[in-house]
View (cartoon, rainbow, N blue to C red):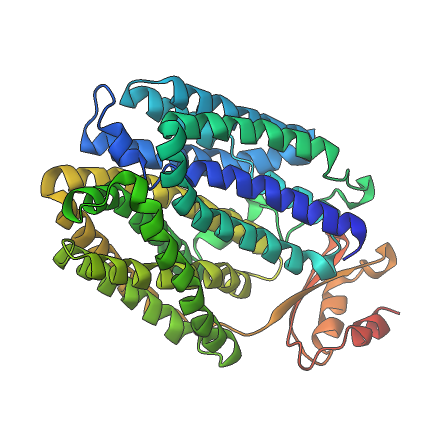
Length: 451
């Protein structure tokens, strides 16, 4: 990467990570805090936790499309302002409905698609995958950090203080956006099919059986995670006798160990080409973890072990699912596939929070964990029919206008290049989208075809 690409990647990753940090810091503490809010019920606690996912699912693709017309930075600014306003509303509310409204406004500041589009504007095709990976790592780190920082900051400032801090971070993000994030070269601000949603491709992507399995999977995964946090704080306090100020020290070793635990699984999946086997194994780990939490929620060791298994599986799946989407999506529709995938993820958080609250109110903590186990079992059934993914990479080629007169012939010549398994020439983009085997593919062979 050059200096502009590095600056853009790390500054955007920082903005997005801080935003997600603000969303996730209340997960381990909100259920206990909500007990003192006016009008609270278990179901409303779950809705308050997950409502951001509903509004984010509704607005992220439209915001991304608006950024094509109105500019990336103005749309991201609007999103961060909405996030800050929602945080203030939640911080100032003394009723559960007020917090729900605040969390909904937070989610309405859905900047994920616009951020990815700006990142694509700032990076060359050969470095874009690396930039996206850095963004993904920053989001994962923010989630882990949030589960530890949430209880600590709640003890110092209260949950309302966390909401106020979140508002400050959002405003700070706007400063970073204009002071540190570079302005992209206008020549690079075009539709990036590898990162952006194309409405005309929705039908193709949504009705693809393999992609649908993955979309349903990420929906279930984030639903389970959100449902768990309607019950976990009560387990730690009421069943294990841990004061809320000590919850951070319970989560910390579990989360650190889970990162080490997922690394061998990722290596086996990628290096040994056992992606499907590892995938199904991780979902099975989730079933086991939820059963342990349901059966032995009065044992400190069992709860710690169950959470460790859950987060090993969660982290491994969180890392591998985007890779599977990229490999199974049509080569020129990766951006659309990722947009639908992200929408499914956010919608899953809403469903999980809502049903987690209902299950807790009707059946207690055991009901939540057993419901999560059943959801994971359903996921295994759905995922069992997943085809073994191809271990191929994407490669993008800019085309001169003179080459576009006979796109079908050009696609055929590109397919004849060693290591090229799929080629799609998109005339309106002046781009060829290739899926290649890196062990056999040499970009210079493509250049010779284009001469």
